[in-house]
Image 1 (cartoon, rainbow, N blue to C red):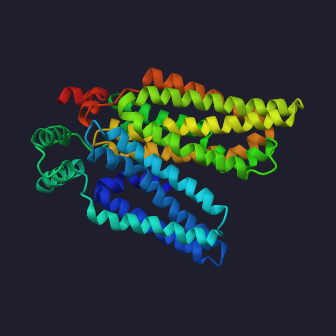
Image 2: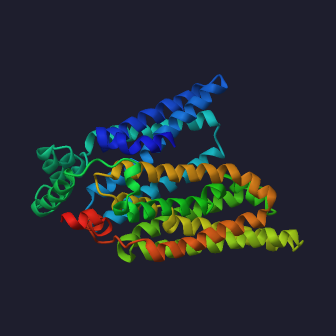
Image 3: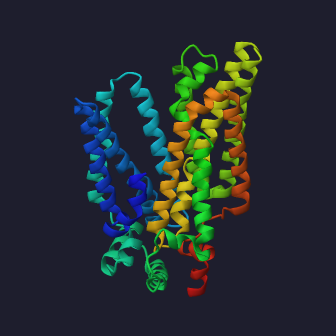
Amino acid sequence: MVGAISSGRIADLIGRKCTMAVSDLFCIVGWLSIFLTKELWWLDLGRLSIGFGIGLLSYVVPVYIAEITPKNLRGGFASVNQLMICCGVSLAYLLGAALTWRSLAVIGIIPCLLQLLGLLFIPESPRWLVKVGHHNKFEAALQSLRGKYTDISQEAEEIREFTKSLQSLPQANMLDLFQKKYLYSVTVGVGLMVFQQFGGVNAICFYASEIFVSAGFSSGNTGTIAMVIVQIPMTTLGVLLLDKSGRRPILMVSAAGTCVGCFLVAMSFLLQEHEWPKEINTALALTGILVFAGSFSLGMGGIPWVIMSEIFPINMKGSAGSLVTLVNWLGSGIVSYTFNFLITWSSAGTFFIFASICGLTVLFVERLVPETKGRTLEEIQASMNSFSSDKI
């Protein structure tokens, strides 16, 4: 949360590449602290450092991807970020079954070092460069991203004109976000993050083993590995469909699937209370968790981050992105913390609540979330923010 609330300002101040480098350094320090820990506070310090780094990365990576990719490929590229996260989490689950936590901490350093090295070979975001006045570097970065022989003149002019129209406007702070002209974008960005987290994803991921055991499995490992196996192909399918089917249809299908998944798990616990056969309860629980994991991976996992990176104009992207990312991690913390209390209160009731929230997500997307497929960032932002329409 601390990383999230400062992520937008840092990314606007030092650029997208440098922010990723800073976050990698925090993660490396954190993993080293965990590996070398001899006292409890070393472990806490390491987790705090990694948390700060991930808070930065969770904002700046989707923003950077959205700002460098052409409109017809932006959704697919942005959702590949979620695919990589899914692969990383799945790999961590599998390695965690075989290795000690100190060994995992050493392995955690490797992707951070790889990203630091990779940053040497990629250009800075052209939109950030033109915003801070580096016009020559802006054209060079855009040309390198589009290809040496691609004509970038029209795209470059559109970016310049839109950025110029924002120069007369003050940099938005957190309070400015609640003005009427920004309200639609903020409602969509914050709303998607609230529904993503309060649908129960982190509770289910963090406590998957315990959920399976409570539902009647002798061990949680089988169900957890099955969940991991489902996530990667479903996330891949989401990547392939995003720029073809659009954001809204996939989001609604994904949210409806998570609703069904939570409902099946709730029914499993409800039938367990009424002493139905164990085989039925475990089958319902496994099916429900797999349906939830697959459906979430299809769209709700990655698309809110894609849309967040698209809907905010560059003069408010820092503050708005910080707010949205903060809400995401705050929601994750609340759900993760309260889950143990909720499951003690009523296992079936907890998952009925999650199912209801997932059902409301479908309605929220249908009523409020715009379709951003095939539109430039400038077109999206002009249509969502009244000040943009007046300026262009």
